[in-house]
Length: 301
Image (cartoon, rainbow, N blue to C red; front, side, top):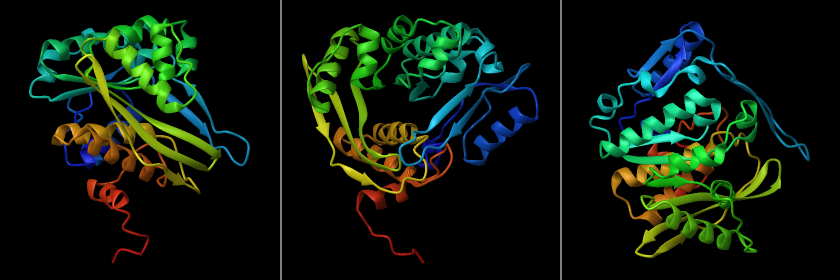
């Protein structure tokens, strides 16, 4: 949705339940400019999640109800990936997809391998959700390793790399841990070109400080960029902020921005999403740029 709002052609590939709820989900995507021609209807249920918002010292909590959904039961063999990827620049995949069950995991792996074979760049957002993996006793380390092996761009923290590589990064500061984990990822995954993440400091449930960091492969080493820190008091909703960040960074990639500029745009998109309720970041590129340039709080008339 964010990429469509930024003015790019975006297509969703997946499965929704063959009922009114599935139709509503597809319709909501279309309403925001996403091409749903590759969405299939299948027998089964829609996966759901429920959010209990936090307050004061009580954190927010997510309850998943996604087992045995139409999407989780579908395999990648149900999609004609060469046809679906024709003309695409990027395939973006969320780590939530393989976490939903063995069929979804195999389908995700087929998708990224097909993209690589077609010369389409692969972007993968780790989105590690322990409760989803535990529901079917999946092996996240081996499955995620296979997916990341095909990725050009990875959205992940040092904790994700610790999981997939079975190691640890004991550096005292967040920047040091990220840099060490990025170098380890570049060593382990030769196709990986860039790794990016946000760095979040939680001062309270509704007051966070957010920055972003990335590493770009540079020969045997890597070049790192770090943004300024943004204070975010009175947060409305932090759900979906990681997706907004990923969309902003991909926006930079699609426009050929320098990595540092794209990282800053991604961070601004994530910061702006904290002010919007719901899962979708409905900002336009111009809205994000106004946050980047600090254009004030006056009513726009």
